[in-house]
Length: 325
Image (cartoon, rainbow, N blue to C red; front, side, top):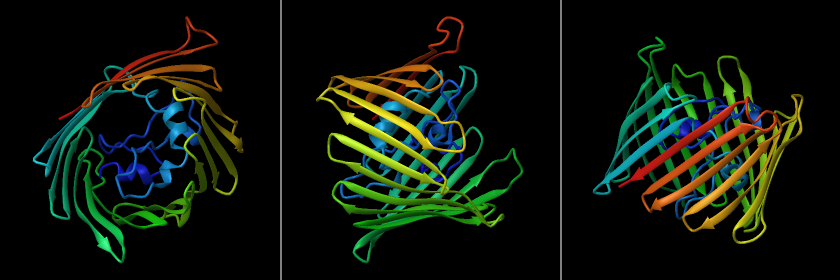
């Protein structure tokens, strides 16, 4: 999927509507721990969780929806269960800074075909998914071309395999791509996950980034702990207080950079609406209201301001709309 590069890369990339990482800073909050956070949807039935499901509830509470920009809209249409058409657009960080694209996905048995036209590049892919040695394997060849930067066509293979309790995903460079990326995950107990993620620069023969991560979730309490580059410790906590109320905390425990954190909570108003709030260490307050008008229409509103100067400080207002058919 277009989102796979995002899910494995430590750098910011824009690769399609299905990628849900929250890019950009929030009131100047640019620490690596939250500068790019991947927020995946729930695993498909029968699939294992990924590296990015560790600490997922805390990320959803403290990050998701707060960085949508001034506006965002995406539309997805399924045609006869074999063809999916999608389009998306955003104004970020301001109304006039527009980015977007259109794309198509088609299925032929175990095979998938993608074609995506974006503001800054053209992407195409072909690949498949099949049972293998008691598990499930997938592989997809992606081609990316940016006519503006003169870098030529970039080719890379996205591949993965899972057989409980083990799962891994890799991005393997083929042409004009300098980095090898991936993660391995062990679901060693019902409530526990352990994973390793890395980003290796082949040209420099050095790791750009690597991390060991562990997670725990028992239905009401979620804990996440990450050890990056053998020097930085980061943690997250999500705790349900009742059926409707929950609180979350995400912070640097130890780092050579200035420590940063976010604390917040959420209230489930009803089955179709959710209210969230977060405050970051720099004093930026964000509020998010998520509303599902129907099963296929979702709207998110976001407002934010600097608590130290609510009148003259930075203000943010955003709206996002998702349509499915």
